[in-house]
Length: 294
Image (cartoon, rainbow, N blue to C red; front, side, top):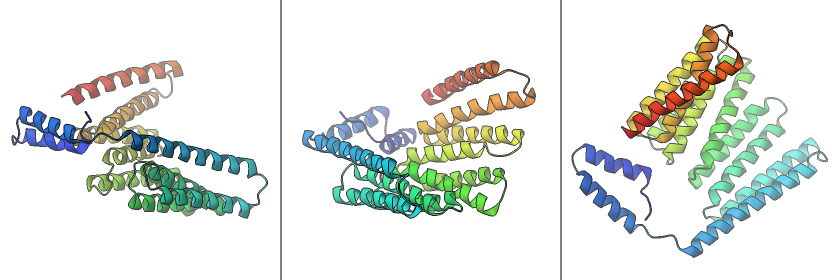
């Protein structure tokens, strides 16, 4: 018996909470829906496995070509080599159009971003980030697959770093830019522009947690990280996506040792700090489990 998707389970839970369905009726609906899901034919499963293996071999071959020939190529040759690998990956994705298509498109966006960063000696992070972001967004629009979202998040972060470098601003602006980018991702997830909501929420949480670490003042760093953790917990209570709970636990685990280190002016040693971090992680994880069960 297959399991329902996260959105379907959430919809059933909302109907039970609203009193439209009883728990017994919701269980009956769930059983009927899961029984109605057709089993994936063995032939299709084999085809998917072969597709993934083929994609992995294609990536490995491209990596070997790039690695073995990199030093012997000129600057223009390196750019065209990465462009060729990108075209090969995207062409294979268009030709196959099966389960491996999303992986190939995401890899194509990644190599396309690398091509952009190599092509421009000045501000490579900005050029590579913009190129990778455009390819990842286009690939997701053409073939929505979860693999494009982390690539898009990475490319967006690279674009923020490049813009701050272009403006000659302090690293604190990188943190601010990543926090703004995390808010944009949260809006896209909330409006369901991003179909894979859990992965999109994970990207937003990761960007926010990383961005919180960039300010130059320690107090702002751990305070912002703690606020991000609280936002993750609050969003989890509203939406029940486990990735948000994980983000909150990670945020608390990072923020508390940083605060202790700042309050004691670095007087405690590394071993004690690790011990504190472990205790905080256990406590936050235990609280998170209790909230999840509730």
